[in-house]
Image 1: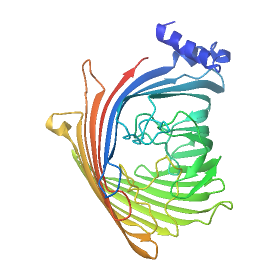
Image 2 (image 1 turned 45 degrees about the vertical axis):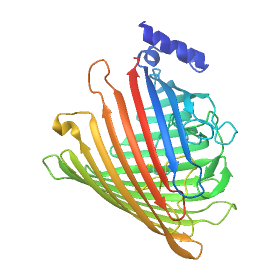
Image 3 (image 1 turned 90 degrees about the vertical axis):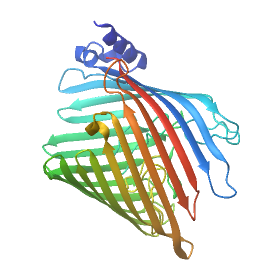
Image 4 (image 1 turned 30 degrees about the vertical axis):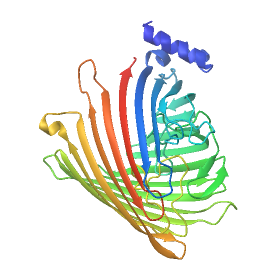
Length: 409
């Protein structure tokens, strides 16, 4: 046996889940492992009067991912694992709260390190896959956040079914999430809504009506807080000559579940993206209506077209517009270098008896990934954001991220 599959076997055995499966050659021989390193500097300046000065931290993260193969037979079994480790490199007194590291209980302080081991059992039948344990995935109703040092994880069961050509079905039962700046699982709460829940269930599917058009319908429930239905259409029109027009339409409706509180929300979004070779231009519109803001699990990512680096523009009655530009420098002989800039403006936000709330956010990303040689897959990205609002924080933010991905086997 090659040394790397031996290591895979040792990790599976050490997990306590792998011993009954180690006799299956495919389980180990088809395994894969990778190590990702993230060096993350985060600075956020609070610009409004009376606010704290800033949040400023620097940290190093390690992400080890192991995916086994499947045992032989009609039902194939396997085990996946993810190991997460984060270290503080610098954090001045009172400058914590960036989301890179867990808070230490003091005012603006953070812990020196944190870690998490997530294990996932899996079973495959034909083109259907069931995973139980630590989960990291994205869907229109719930998506794990991965914008800090280490990713968010959910705990539960996830089923993906692709038995009919063009149709993908997905359902899940989740009972906890681990925030990206935490080592511990916790019960769910709804962003800007509140409450506590120990169950999020959803089911739905995406159907490819034509090679260019996909329709989606999903239903979910955060038990005792809200129910939500999502419908979407995505169409890509090939204009020829490395030109295309993508249309992304989304609608979601939410109401109360249980007796926590009444809830009424509707969210419509449309994003149109025109690609012209190395250039891409996008325009979007988002409208929130009803008596409440857009509900989603706190700490996760909302599926809104105007959810960007900091804001989601999902406040009560908010209307927002987006303009975005991307450029791929590969067209100039610099593959791996990319640029993005976008601007979102929101208004009509309900503030008491008036709808006079306004906000805007501007983002700029500049990134480069080494394409070949001994430093292949080494990436550097600078992310800048500016936020101004008459009802929330005014922010200037910079993130500098160095990343390196290494395939172990």
